[in-house]
Image (cartoon, rainbow, N blue to C red; front, side, top):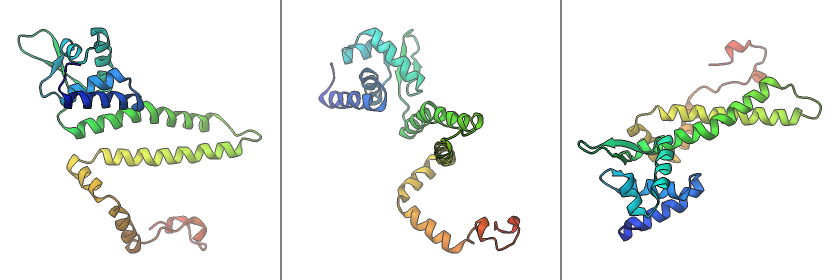
Length: 197
């Protein structure tokens, strides 16, 4: 590698972590190099600095583009393509989370819904069907929460994250002030329309 000690250590670590995050080492190192560089780099520069073949760099850049983690830049008077990462770390984080949700969570939720829609529990399947329903509800709850949070402006999201565990205290205080939602079995004969306040 043709890098400073700081760059090299960061790039090598990112390559190691990449394999744990579901991308290969080469892609992780390319991303780390682009992330640390102030100026956009072309494939030849990336290849020289990391010691990778041009074909490996090209494949890595295509994968990073598919993840929407790198941006293509054109420099006037230069026909080569240059690449960079978004300047805003929150854009990177939001992109990563959205892409992982799209690739990993959404297909699972689709499959769970299909199983419930197209299968009637047969003999010995009642428990399994119940567990699938529970998992579907949990994932729907989490993805609904994610959608709500993802719509927040970044400054509000930072404030929310800074609250940390204090959110639990706020929820407890709100629960003590807001009217409690009654369950249908607590109805005491009143119609359901009156149970929700």
